Image (cartoon, rainbow, N blue to C red; front, side, top):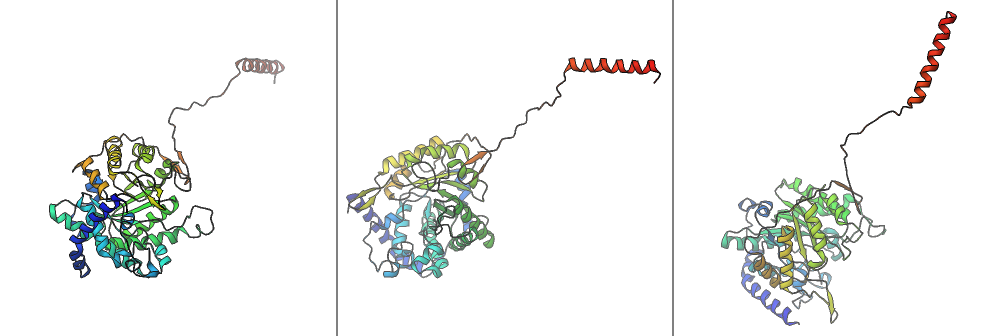
Length: 412
């Protein structure tokens, strides 16, 4: 194990030691504080920049987990299922990020749509697993809020289903918009019942699936009468600056701003530096708050394993620039980031960080799903006239006058 991974592991185990007894108490029925006691997520966002936690999935990789940790051969490797089989481990990771200053925890539910869980034979546990994972995060967040009165928030993590409805691949596109909407509605209902403050559609590679997800989230909020739950959508860009199927950033803005969403942004994808151009465009043209939650650099292969090489200092410095120069409202870490990355990010931004004011050039547009076309309305005066040949008109008038005279002389 690399020395840096060893330090991370030691930190997580320290948090686990703190949280084991509370995790047992939680299993017996720890209460979840009502949302009415917290300032709303969007209200907090108007007052300060919010810092998310770091990676969950790659944090599990720092431990030597066994088949038994995952609940047996059938569920071996399913990280989301660890909420059931190792709630102390999930809780310990939550506590580690809270300890270094994050404002928002993501639930361990990135792959917990029914469609993904059915791959493990867990489809019937969709509601229970999502609700349980949300309560794990909610309890940890509320414990830290009780210490100092500062609100901590929980984001219900909703990842892609693995389908690509916009593609022409018969297998990957073989699902309807309504079917996708229902899949996301089911997950959202459970996350809301578990106590999340914001529903987070993230790492999205197909803009049509994002639209279906947002429709499902809208229906879940109506079903539970929870208009207070915020909605945030984050897309995945490759090194070309486009989504997987070619959707460009202007088309993302045109598409998502027409949907019921409160925050849009980027996550995962690359390290923060490769996101700079897209972030600059988003903050200059979108009317919504912007989030940026990148990986710790582009992964490299070391001894057959993917390693995210960006250290906390450059990671935090670049995200600090995004906040102060471009006006990004939400920052945090995705794959490969650790409590050390979030700790340094908090140190760079301070306790009450403010995003730079944004000069937004809003461009009304429509989108094909790939490109955006700007809508333009011209209001200048339009002159409409008739061309007149004055010489021909004079000749015609003279001929008419001669005809009238002939008629007069003939007595007509």
